[in-house]
Amino acid sequence: MNKLIPAALAAATALTTAFTAHAADGRIVLLQQTVRYQPAELVTPHGAQALLARVDGVALRLCRERTHSAFERTSASQVSACRGHAVSRAVAALDAPLVTAAHADHLGAQLAAR
Image (cartoon, rainbow, N blue to C red):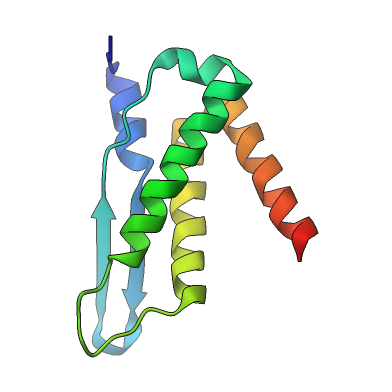
């Protein structure tokens, strides 16, 4: 059964907010998509990692699709930055300790790989 409590619904909506600012033409692009999850996912390491992976996948897709202009090209570094900000904001909004820990582990692994 897929039930969302009001706070979880707000967090799930915030989970995948991708944005980009275009200073040259004075606009900001906001994209949102809801990621549904079971409250039980928040209390197990495996569930937290699975939720984080879904959030990351949605953030990547939204950040890749954020512009449809033939005159603008989105670089890999812009997509990566957008994705990182979107996932970090989602994790912060969710405020679930195991998801936060899984995200910190993921960030640590990324830094170690550099």
